[in-house]
Every structure is written in structure tokens, then in C-alpha cells.
Length: 477
Image (cartoon, rainbow, N blue to C red; front, top):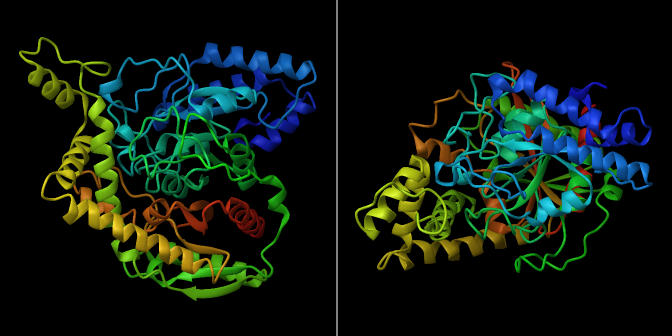
């Protein structure tokens, strides 16, 4: 059993054939974490005893005749998703020591499928960042080059999958936090449509943008995980009753006859030439496989980053107001007054980037500025969404880069937040539009750093997205 090369599919097949047990598989993952995670720091916590108990229960269930693709499969969980009995710190001192009393809906669905929770992965604090350097506890490194970032905010999940210390992981995506680290680390990252997967039990950053999704080694594995996660949830009123199709069945379709759009606003100066070489080759490969390439325009893309950082920070300001040192979260010692309690608890509990975004969000929501900033941003968001609606009348999916560069050196962006924010230029529009989007590896730079191809689909168009992703994946084999 070579843990590093196993996928969900191959591991499930091995379990069915009794080539190994879930306990052996889980122990293999735990051993890999112990041996390899030290310099990478993908994990914040690992509950070996709990994972092995879950694995033993999965083996017993399989012996009793139960079977599904996730039964007994170890999966890593981003530390923003509540799992009963496990820490959920959101990589923040504000929640240090907090243990969740309940399962998020996505965790409950994985648990009911018999999945094993391998550990909690590191992240940018409260999912605010693009490099996993903003964690209060440790910095995660890119497994391909330890001097570089893994991306963020789901950098721990991406690094664990890329390093072979997880078969798959869950991440969250508010403005690219699944797709960008997937691109930087060379794995598959799927951001589902807004409303496709429940957000109940996921600590909110920006409620109109957040989505939970899988980070895997293959597109087929992403389809398997999405199948388990998707669907309406009574606990989350934003989930849609749209029927959940058979995602795996869609993978067999090829590219012939499909219309693939290339938005000119995503092919711009400033993108690393090496990145563009691989993106252009991917486009050519798709054309040779029978896809029709269509040039399109998304004219309001230039406003997307500004719109995103107004809306996201405004929602963060409101969502994080609950962490006040009164009911839960960090509480300062010996406050002199109620105001002192609030001020010191938040000042001590939140990191620099979180404070920066809360301040910005509070400003754009404040009296006299709401209409000038937040109100106008929402109107611009509507125009961005309409651009996508028009585009998908002309094509089935869009192909773009995930990020303007491959993984950059640690420390390069921490002193220049604006540089980090501008790196989200190709990912934030999908969140503003509520679309589904997929990052698939499409090559390596001369420095042996992965490059990701972004595939964008319309809202609830995951079947087409996965079909194109799987077809392209086959072209690269």
C-alpha cells in the first residue's frame, strides 16, 4: 500500500478487495503525517485515537455488508469547519481552546458516509489571506518548495493532499481559497456553486460568498466528495433545492462539440509568461480534442477585486462582531470596564490581517459611506453576474488562469497586502457571481512549481465543469 499514490477511488477499491483495512489505511496516513508534516505544517491538530476508532467502525460496517466510496476513507478537514469533539480554532487565538459541540452539515454528511476525520488543517486566520501565512499558530509551506507559500486560505488542505499526507481534504472558498492553493500545490480544487453545499457549522467570513468544497488528487475524487456534500439543508436557508445529479456519471463525456470561452479580461499583461504558456497549451489541447474555442468579453471584470474587498470585508465586520470576549472566544484578563473588555479581547484575539479587514468593512458600512461604497459595490456585483449570464449563452464553460503567478516566496506579500489582494483577480469573480469553478493542474514551471487551469461554469453547472475537468485530465496523462 503506497499511501502517497492512493486516491479516494483506488483506496476504496483496495478496501473492497480486502487488500487492506480502513484501520491500516488510516494508520498509513497517520504515519505519513508523522514522517512528513514536520517541515510542511499542513496540520494544526491530529486526533489519531479518534481516527482509528472511526476506521475500526468503518471496517465493521464493511464486514456487515455496507459499501460506498467514502466508507473508511481518511479525509482532512480545514480548521474552519466544525466537527464534534474536535478543535475549531479558525487558526486564530480568538478561538484557541474551543472544542466544537456539534458537526457542521458537511461533516455530518461525511460521517454518515463512514469517512474518517484524519486531522485539522492549517489556514489563514478566519480564512482571510492567500498564503496561509496569517495563521496564529504556524506557517504552512508548499510541499514542492518549502521556501514558498502553499496559497490560501485553504493552504493546509492543499499542502496535505499534495504531500500525500491526506487522500483528500475539505476547504472553503470565499474569493479563491480552494482554487488558488490547489493551483499552487498541484492538486484539484472545486468551488461549488453558491447554495449547492451547506454552510451550516462553517465559521462565517463573508456569508454571501463562502462555499465549502473538495480538494483532491483527481477530478473523479472531487466528484465523489461533491456527491456526498451537495444538497439542500434545513439548517441553511441559502442552500438550493435544485436536484443533485450523478456527478460521476458526467465524467465520461469528452470535449468534442463543447464551446469553451476565453474571456479577454483574464488574459492580460502582468501574468507570469510561464503560467500563460501552460494555459495556452491547455487551450490548444482542448481544441485538438474537438472543443470549439470562443473569444468572449466580461467587461466588468476590472471592478471585481475592488467590489470583492468591499463586500467581503463588510460581511466580515458583521460576522466577526460576535467574537467580543463575552459569550465565547478569547477574553482579556482583568478588564477595567465593558469597553475595555471588548477592545482588549478583540485586540488580543485577532491577528493583523483580520483587524485590517474588520476596520475596512466597518468603514464601508458606516454612516455616510454605505451608499458610496457598499451600495455601489452591490450594484457592480449585479453587473459582473450579468456578464457571466451573457457569456454562458455563448459557451459551455470558460477557461482561464487560476492565478497570475505560480507559488511565490514566503514573506513576499505579507508586507504588501494590496499585492496579495490583486493576486485574486482571476478567482473572485466566480464568488461574486455564485458560479462553480474548478482548478486542475496543467503543468510545471522551470522551477518545478505547479500551474493550475481554471474552468468556470454557470451556477449549478458542476456536471459540465467536472466533465471538462476530467476530459482535460485524461489529455494530460
